[in-house]
Image 1 (cartoon, chains in turn yellow, red):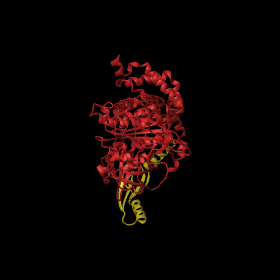
Image 2: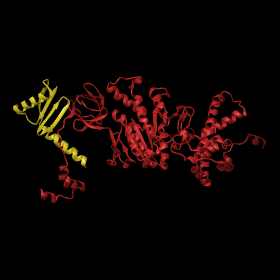
Image 3: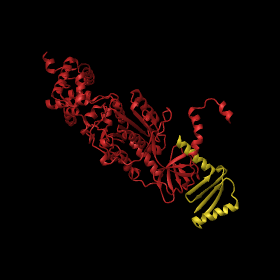
Image 4: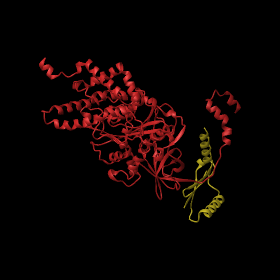
Length: 73
Length: 524
């Protein structure tokens, strides 16, 4: 299973390691990790495991705010 | 900050209100951290994106590609999802994220859509600004069930004599218009739309794969005849993607169903479903679905049957509205036994068959009476029309039979000659300009005169003139008679007598159109 972790800057080795351990614990040993750096996310991280994504980046949050504001108009 | 606010000159009212409302709006926002189903663009070709992931995507769901583009998930396979891109595909890259939206295709509709031109996603393309949206109508929907329907009982007046008399259409019926290119298929549908001006029917015209110039022309015609006041045009022209052409009929139908839900009568024209089938074939081949006859996919029948099944007449309990569908099919070299024509013929409640030969011979509308039928419309036909048109079909059938026969021999007995004369005149009376729809009463008056022999004594080349003058005469001298026919919708003895007297009087007044009787001319 492919795991992609995207952050605005390189993660500290300690953080990356604990993240790795947590994901392996939940999804099993066969996880194949890829750490991406994308300044466009501004802050926070986005984790994609297989076809499931959890978006905890600033950009993602802003997109949610925008969508909900547009819905209220 | 405060200073800037005061010096700024009048911002737009809504923007100002929005700015004041912002803090309270922001309070209402809930941020969630839920896992969502995503995928990635693996490949793009010919308007079709192949996406990985998207585990929980539904068939027919809208997905977002990258940040701005949308697609329709049509093929769900083990390792990938086939997505048809809606709109312009420029800018899609391999690796773009594909996310679910949880929405199925729908069209935003409101009463303000009447008089507008929209594309297959329901967006206005007539330059008159965006549409107000009152409700979202789903494009794919199960047709109304048996218990919600009632049989056809109200006529849909096309204003065309040949159709209203012999191939009557009822509200809620599906009547196919079929024929070769340029035989007047669109003209019949447009003429029918023009005739709805006083019939309280909303018209939806769906143009599929047509030239933009043709759509513009159609719009102009409808505007010139003030028919846009109750019409909507849905256009997916030849330059739009196959996906948009495939969706256009469903968009038109969703709009029609919005008005159906209000209990209104709607007329929807699909011009034409041959191009629709071709667009669907293109999509299916690109998605690598197995192809069948004429390379159409296996579900091309279902493509049209589920569309046309949604035409209906609802019973009073469900609002009593109706959707009448006039699908158009273009044949090649009069071949109505090709795949798509036979499919649609079997789905619809009858067909109006147009022939090139008739068209070229000057018979307009070029309706082939023998091959055209209406399976349910006669139940809705006005009684008066039934009374006068009853003998007409028979007269015409006899005429056609004798016509072929008479070509070989010039020596004909009196009776044959009479049948031929009558037939020629009835045929002539059925010729009609497409943009000159007639009211039911007018049609009854004219056909009454033709089938009762009042035309037999009129010169063959004066028939058109006669009809014109007769209608004018009826309107000026016998308006009350026409009003009575329109009101009563049937001919009783008194009305029949009055009609006969009127026709006779008119003929006496116009002896210049009469045939010169041979006996008289030789003797005198």
